[in-house]
Image 1 (tube, one colour):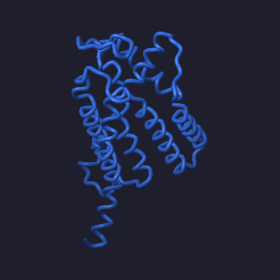
Image 2 (tube, one colour):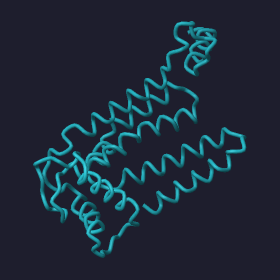
Image 3 (tube, helix red, strand yellow):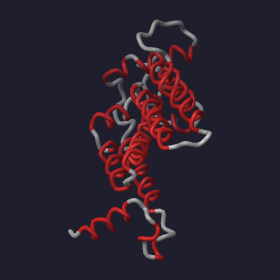
Length: 212
């Protein structure tokens, strides 16, 4: 590839409007790519989510802890409780909406729940982790193709996929941490008056991750 062709490819990748033909300028390719990535992540995480009507791995702890919080029963938990509170909110929402209306239920958590009731919020939150990863990659590289590729790698990563399909707490911590990184990366590129507010929110999210 000649130097001129390479420079043109870089301009196209960075979204230089002058490098695009007129008919392509109104098409938000990057946003469409992010939307497709989100839908793909949602499909991977919600497919067969209630398939195993049992507690899997550390579900023997966290849905039980969340059920105790919902019933007002005191308990000792080895982790800071923020993520378990979020899990409890997901269970409460599922129990009061059609989300948890499945006839397949169990009482292993201390409440008579459908498996999806203590898993759906993990799946939803986990589906946004690839999007935030793509946003961080874009802030660091300013390359849209790199950003989408980074998001795709996270979307199909086995560890993230498993953590997002069961009633665990790690996806909440990861999302808070990544959002903090994203805001910090955006603040480093900005010199506006809102930079301090952005940095403050990044600090809050880092703190939420530590308290989760």
